Length: 499
Figure: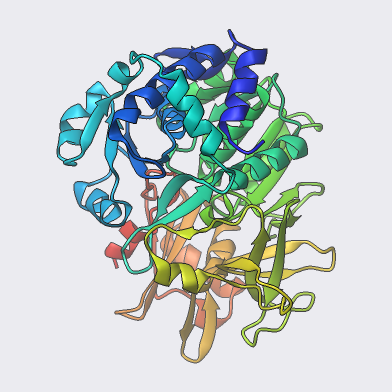
């Protein structure tokens, strides 16, 4: 395969009437998805452009997938924009993205007008006449290194970075994911992550590759957790890939004491550190043969570069490994002096292989900084990605995540890893979630936590019993719940504003 559309068309040929993507309004079958996508692609031909970014500004639904595939049929690059994103941030993204058009839905059509782009309404585009000849010409000229999508993430300077992923990246990655986790036409994904978040790549393209079914879990199921297990069981969902915070909802509310998921066989998680107590809660209530896997990787490696299938028990204070490298993707750990780290030595994780993105869109300086020549290869050009993640390898050959380089601070002459403070706080019985924030301007470390029965002085005393004195936060703040961003992760920037 050299084009992700081959995955769609093969599944449409094998399972024309099978539901491909399901949302709260209904379902789109594989044959409908192919048909809608070709019509959208034909409608976009009037733009007369190729390999240009087109924005998708549609509420999370099956229509987003139709728009993605339609843009690919037109020979262009898609970028999914969060419809709840402030206009100021969209403007920052568009300052580098420079999209030629936007596809939107009726619900967002008025806001889309403010983007000052040529606008296509999704329902009208789905009714366009298919220009089979022109679509075929475009398709025959496409190659696997053509850009597929651009996904924006936060930048350290406040300017979002657009990671460019090509067809080859997704084809290689989805092949690995399908083979590793036994994804097939009988798989039913329960999707939690937004479609502008890299984790959704696994859900979407594993589905398209195998003829599986993806069901979008409504937000209300996570806002009112009593509905979550019922939804999983009613829809016979057998595979989930969520951020750990979503798993914490079930654990914190003890949902499985009332009703257990009946069909789950594969439980994957990524995006944050998985607290062992959350993992243990899920493992307690699901059958022994259920696969639990910790996936790890940045957007710049399509989605994942390492993984660990949980094969043993862990104490609440332990760190869950991020495991070993995926096939077609290699990793190595370098110390500050550029030499390879030995066992249990800390260093930065580097990634090379077919999952690695081509760079940042319209940002050559940042691309040159992060996508570098492999320092271990002096023989020929070989790009690799500097993740900015601090890790070490244990005696079993498993990689252990330590934290972000930018979460590591130096204070009073000591190097402090904020993640170590969080790990200690999170191991205290009753703590549901926590986040440690450092504000450079005030030189202050603050720990925010959510625990109904743990007082602030009790938390401080506990940390003093677990950590060296220079690790102890200047302040601990008990909260009813920690703020979350659109991806479901703890919103650290919002917490920083409170210091």
